[in-house]
Image (cartoon, rainbow, N blue to C red):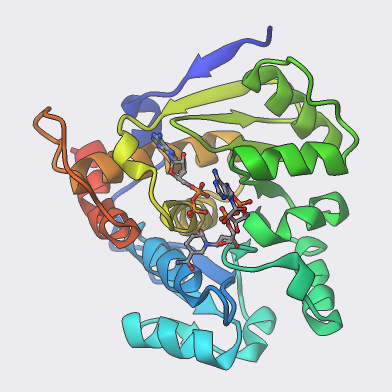
Length: 277
Ligand SMILES: NC(=O)C1=CN([C@@H]2O[C@H](COP(=O)(O)OP(=O)(O)OC[C@H]3O[C@@H](n4cnc5c(N)ncnc54)[C@H](O)[C@@H]3O)[C@@H](O)[C@H]2O)[C@@H](O)CC1
Ligand SMILES: Nc1ncnc2c1ncn2[C@@H]1O[C@H](COP(=O)(O)OP(=O)(O)O)[C@@H](O)[C@H]1O
């Protein structure tokens, strides 16, 4: 059994800060998302919203025109365009709301260039197959079914291991940090540590909350360059769980109520205020 560290609110607080007079929009972190597709435009909208709501200073978006239009309709603050890759980027988010079987050669080349770059990359959903090509610092964010597919791709046997050992072994094999989503999210780094973050509410089990998480992770990575990716990711997962609890009306205890993914994104500022308090 691998050792598992329980992540706390105090641990999370160390990775968030109040902007000072010395900050500008770049100093707070520039996040770029290449997410969503005509089949899943909402995933792009949710990830962009979440990156802004987590406190990014600048959010860029690149994707199909129809998807970019939806992103801009919701968040006109976003800078969209095909030349995003030539601008300053502190962290990328790729894969949410995409299907690898729909990927054309141009998209393949663009994604490969992102994972071969210097900026940290959140590799989600439909981009998980690219983890093996990554040279940038990266974080893969599978849910249980995606995790099983990733293990299969890497030739890892899926027999009887506990989740922590399986995440640890996958991180080792893929050469990057693995964030295995669930009610209890596990974050494993190639150097051997595993961190656990309890979401604290089952109301998060609803479509699109993973797309929100990917945007959160992009923003926290952009704001915390040079810090251990697993700890930054754990802080992002904790804030996402807290936003779920706030959105579901559980701040004062209680059982809560149904939420949609955009409610989680909308509650991120309050969740951050809670850890900064
Ligand atoms: N609003 C949006 O645009 C959303 C986009 N999403 C995107 O949708 C894509 C697919 O993600 P998934 O998480 O669905 O991929 P999964 O690998 O979980 O599911 C793949 C397929 O299997 C089916 N399936 C899975 N579990 C099932 C079950 N228990 N019972 C019956 N059928 C089951 C689903 O219908 C789906 O078509 C990703 O790119 C993801 O980012 C989702 O995040 C949901 C929200
Ligand atoms: N039962 C649950 N309790 C708490 N959190 C959950 C539960 N199920 C899922 N989550 C969280 O909700 C999010 C779901 O992500 P994901 O499965 O990728 O959804 P989607 O692809 O629809 O966006 C993850 O952050 C996960 O940790």
